Length: 210
Image (cartoon, rainbow, N blue to C red; front, side):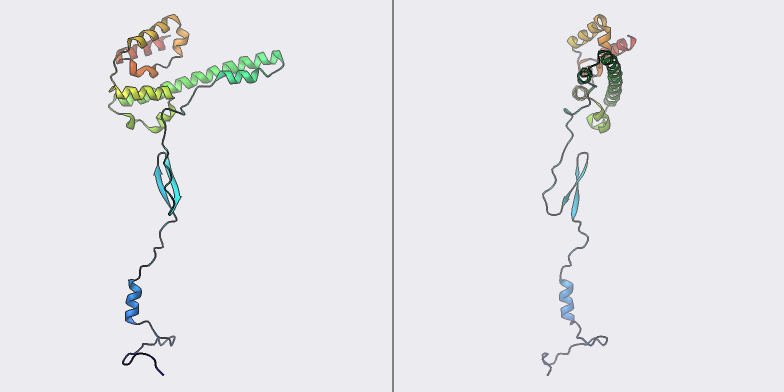
């Protein structure tokens, strides 16, 4: 006996022999939301220095940022090396090794100082041409030590035209006259925010002339 409502007919799929879905049922099915299939299980979050991924539905990853006042490069330290040399029991060998370590460290410090001067000169030139800290490449800032970053920051704050600090100027000039060797190791760029353009250039030329 047919249980379908009176006056209604139900289409049959001739291929399978099964009833087909009615038009009303098809409309209802079409009205149902289809779950998206292209939603990623994780998302990339832009952060300083790169991106961090987090799983969908989890708490956002905590952003990290570059701290310009910490973690800068530092020159080689002679003292820990000498402490290791002191462990050598043979006095003749120890003396030879110590001489080699001192020479090697001195060369490394000289290379480090030259690299610092070059990086700071490039950063200062960007500011002198009208730029600010945002125009200095991050890679260049990372090459600079913390005193150099601080000096560059203060130089920008002074509008690339700092007032001359006479105490700093005469201290450096007297050092050049009284102790030329130690003056040669001074990174004058670390004082860029305390010297006007004329005195800064004078001290650089004095250092190169020694």
